[in-house]
Length: 329
Image (cartoon, rainbow, N blue to C red; front, side, top):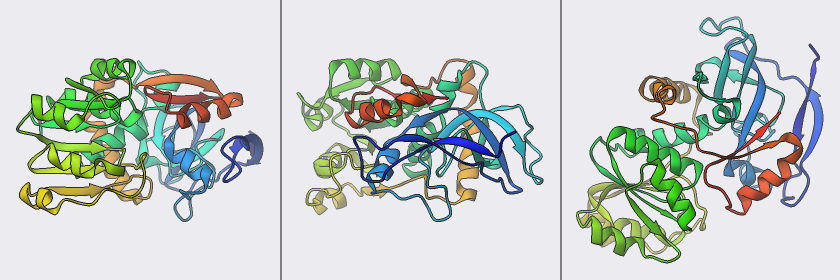
């Protein structure tokens, strides 16, 4: 086995070119890590932010892009007992996914359900763990409640809609086209809102005047007060991203106080290893079997080769996706 591997290098701040295949030494796993030969990896908006220079990796993590992979275990650290070379796995990583090999904490691994391809497995971890964390751990959403999922045709949005359907949670969603809303409906959304043509506040108040128990928002910008308007008493708004801008509109404190609302922001990449291990284990127990029986599906939009990585990034930058963009070695 060679001590070198290929990886995709990026030039920070260059969003039109600057992605290229280069060679680097293999990562050296610690005693609690495994070395995975990557079969495929997915593109996330965090990759684009890092490429633009706005989202540096956590201290001590690989500067190589990439937050989720699928592949086969090449070797295991001395302290690893639950995993063996040759097993198909998928996982979140804090960096280093755009490479032929990546070192991953063994406690962050998930066995790939047999029904899933490498491309599907590559797009599973980040969106489903993010959605699971936001809905259950942060938003405290219970079975039988109602939720509004913004950006429903995004990878996280489609994962969240499927999880809600699995748990018996009614969902409304927003997207920018009839085509994207059709994908959302197939994922389980019950109330569909084209935000370019409709006011989601008016639509939700018309159909669900009692409000929703949680809003999952990747948009930010001027959505804050509108989110509060459709929220039920004691509900929560959970923010994952800020696609429409980092500054919110002026907070209506009367709405916030009157509804006893909570507004939370959450991320996954900079969580510590123990938190991620607990999250992965909870998800494995609660949700992973549903991929084997078809109740949950990884929403893959397009699969590219490593030589098409620039095209893949541009597709995500243009918001021209319904689900995950995946790159295969």
